[in-house]
Amino acid sequence: MLEVSQELILAALWETLYMVSASLLFGALIGIPLGILLVVTRKGHILENRVVFSILNPIVNVFRSIPFIILLVAIIPFTRFVVGTTIGTTAAIVPLVLHIGPYMARLVENSLLEVNEGIIEAAQAMGASKTQIVFRFLIPEAFPSLILSLTTVTIGLIGATAMAGAIGGGGLGDLAITYGYQRFSTITIVVTVVLLIIIVQGIQSLGNVIERKIRRV
Image (tube, rainbow, N blue to C red; front, side, top):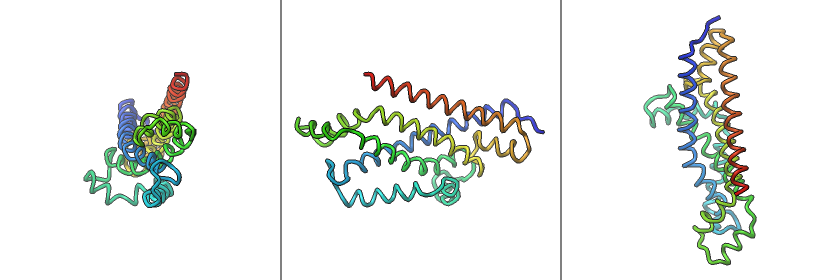
């Protein structure tokens, strides 16, 4: 049985946090605007546009239909084009962003759709512009739900980074496969699983606390 060093575990932990943070940032740049557009352009909403909605909705569905492990392999040429390599943590961020962006868009859409239509009607009655309705009424009202959606997205990203390890993406998943599975190191599997559980529990607890505090404001 091969014992993995503390340095390797810390390096893998850092790589996982790096992949999650960067993917979350770039995924939010795609997912949040996309989610807002999916809401405001749907039938009967403030910027109803059948063409835009009919284009965006299937695109989100297509990307969400592709299992992440297949997406990882399918876009290898695109990943090489964007970052110049297909191996390592930076390369793994490309498929992670394409995986999480549409997923985040759908969660943002669901959160915004929970907002009572009466609030939008009240905003329109006060003469608010469409931009003001989105940023001063719609998003603030949905903010607690958006926090929970962001928490769900982050936890989903952690699972995806573990899968990225299957093709040399680095992080805890790569460590578990390289040392735990291929070199029969049971302790490595246990350590990586425990670390992932701690990270996920910490993020979920933090998301719950923030959501409760916002609802009380």
